[in-house]
Image 1: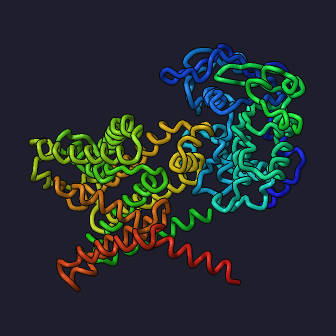
Image 2: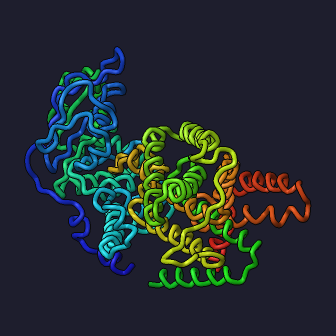
Image 3: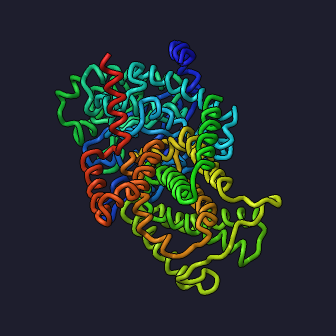
Length: 281
Length: 311
C-alpha cells in the first residue's frame, strides 16, 4: 500500500508505463472501404497517424467516422483496403489482436467492468502484459505474485494520473459519467498502447471535464503515443488536434492543420456551414 | 503462509470430524463435502465466468462413470485411470465448449441442457459398458500402496478434494485469469478491446471447471460404490444452480453457504413436515431470488458495510 502511494507520487510513474518517442508514421490507412449491404459507409479512405501526434477526424452524422474507428479498432472487418501498423499489414483482425499490437480504444458510451473496483478495471487493461501459463497461477510462483503486485502499483499510478486516485477502491457504479470516461482512458493506457483511439471523448462532459480531458490527451501524445480522435465537438478538436481529417458521406474531403481546415471552402460548404461556430472555435 | 496455515487447519478440522461420525452421518457428511466442491467449481463457471451451463453435474457423472469403466472394464491401474479420466473430461469439455461458448446466455443453456440429456441417454443405452438403466455396482476402490482406503480415511480424501478445488479456484480467481473471466462476463466487447481473447477465455473457464467436476465425480464413484443414470439427472444440475444463486453467485463463500444450506434443508424439513418439504424448499428459493438477489452472502455483506460506516 505504501509502495503504491510512493509510486503514484513519482513524476515518472506514468512515463514508466508508457513508452515510445516521436517519429514517423505509425498507422497508415490506404483505400479503406466498408459496405453495409448497398450502403457505402466508408469509401477509399486514406489516413496516417504519426507517433506522438494527435489526429482528429470530424464529419457530420453518417459520415463514416465511427465505421472507420471500428475498423481500426478491429470491431469491424473492412470490405477493402489496408491498415498498416508499424510496417505490419493488419486488416480484419479481431479487436483483441489489435489490442495485442498496441492499438487501444475508449468507448463513447463508457463500458466499465461493473463488478470490479476502479483499480481492477485498470488491471484488466494489463491483461496482455501479465498473462502467462495457467500452471504458474496454480503453482502460485513468486514471479506471478511479483507481477500481480507490480500490476497493482502500476494501476494505482495510472488511476492517479487521470485524477481518480481517491476512487481507486471504489465501485465503478459510484463514478460520475466524466469520471467513467477518465477510467476508460486509464484502462486503455494500462496496456501500454502505441496508438490510442478516442471515440468522441468529449461527448457528455462538462466544460471543466473537457479541459481536463484535453490536458490528459496532450500528455499522452507527449509520451510518444499516437492519438486518433473522433469528435463532434469542434471547439474541443480545433484546440487539441495537430491535424484534422474531415469526412463526408464516407469520403475524406479535406485534411490539414486546424487553421487550414477552418479556411477550407469545401469543408465549410459540405459540412460546417455554421460559420459562427467556426469563428468561435 | 497465513493462507496455507488456514488451509492446513481447515483440513485438520474437517478430517477430524470424519473420525467422529457414525456410518449414516458419514454418508451425509461425504455427500455434503462433494456438493460444496461442486458448488465451488460451478460458482466459478456460472457466477464468475457468467456461463449459464447445465452440464456441470453431467461432468460429475462422466468422471464417476469413467473411473468405474476405466478401472474395472478396461482394467487400467488406478493412477492411469485417474489421468485418463481427467483427460476424457477435458476432451469432452472441449468438444462441448468450442461450439457452445460462442453461444451466449440462453443458447449456451440450451446446448448444455441437450448435452446433459444426451449423457443420460448414452448411459441408458450403453449396454454392458455403462450397465444400462441399472448402472454399475459391486466394485470397490483398488488398494493404494497395498492399503485399503475406507471409512474415515476415504472421507479425508474427499476433504482434500474439496480443499484442493477451493485452493486452485481461489488462485485462478485472484489472477489475471479471474479478472479476464469477470471482464468477459461484465462486458465482452470491452473485454476484447482490452486484449482479452473472449472465446479462448470462455473455453478455458468451461473446460477447467468441468474437469474439476469430473474429478469430484471420480472421487464420488467410491462413495456409494455404484453409479446409475438417475443419480446424474437434470434435477441435480438445477439444484447446483440454486445452491450458487441462493448463496450468492460469484462468491466462493456464497457457494459454500448455499451448498450446505440446500443440501441439509431437506434433512431438517422432512422429519417436520414430511413430503411437503419440497414446497417449502421451493418457496424459500423463490423468496431468496426475489428479495435477496445477491444471495445470502449479500445479507452478510450488508451487515459488514453497516458496521464499517456506523462508527
